[in-house]
Length: 529
Image (tube, rainbow, N blue to C red; front, side, top):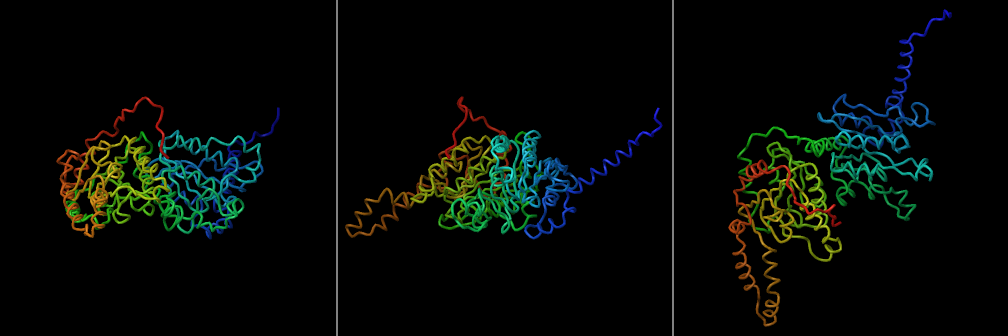
């Protein structure tokens, strides 16, 4: 019988835990001072610092922190370039992933790709928002340039498609974002970019130069001015990383954790009649005078609750998340200060996507209408406005959430219909202010079209048609009265602007959360574009 003393199990465990702690420490920022210093020169935060800023303190539970390829030593290519796990954001569960640019430019090896895939699957399984902090490349070129390894591809993008409309997806572009990060973000419901730091696009300058010969600066190609202001791919451009991360939190605060979860309703504020009465002096009856519709929105919604989405893109339409008596709603309005509030192709895309977002997550739609119609002419046709306007109508026609429309001033033609005016999409309340002017097209335009030959004949005969034109305009305007829509029961009511807020609140309190569209037994509808 051996007299050798058996090993101390506790001592063995202590040794193993010490080795584990060492391996964990090797993945953290403190173990990589040179890489952190380099990161500071190009961006504000590291991947782990970004997560810490985003989530509730102490709530992040990392998954796959020790993941490393077989050929990597401990601390080499930590976490394989993707930091991911579960966390709480303002008290609610979320799944978070961040690209670590300090690890081979944020590119993903096989394990990093698996971690990203698992994050999307986890978001689906848990019904929790997916938040992506993107700063890096796509697949690691050293791995991707192999047919044996690349041919099977991955079902990650299929999972992204499954997640869409189930749990919210939000992305912050925080640095390099060409290629895969743009594809990930492109499927998100909200994208924020940092001006002068972030880029996004399908290919960066080097690949563009190699493939097309075009020599272009990265910010000209895919900076915030291009992708937020000009192209509308991203939703918001901000000045620093902290603002980008804060915008993700604010965006998520209006949405339920998933399409079947309770709405995040807050306490209703005390009513302030002075704010309501200020609405009476905001909208001039003269349709040629501009005003800022955002002021109307601010005064109708809960004070301080309005969060505009895509504020610098297609400024002729305003899309905002807001709260009304504590309840999240989506607000859509025509902006008279930009193109008179006309609906253009970009505006149609912007509003259509916003309608889909609100409908997916159960936010009622509130429309403020002052629309002269759709854009016309060769530029509009070249921009495929016919299909883009159809998409706007298509999305509203498929929406099941409550909707309320308020005509502030102009309600002309198909633009009025596409903005849920009157009975067009069975609004739960169809209201108008006394400044409303509802008809098929602008009065001046209608007179000119109808009387074009007559006016030409008058000119040919040496007669000035201006007095007759003025008479006809006055005659037609007498038919387009502010109260005509209500008199014909095309509207529910004409209201005092000061009563707008309580009337909308009342309508939404009475409306069911979802309506039955009574669709025929088809498999699916076909989006116009």
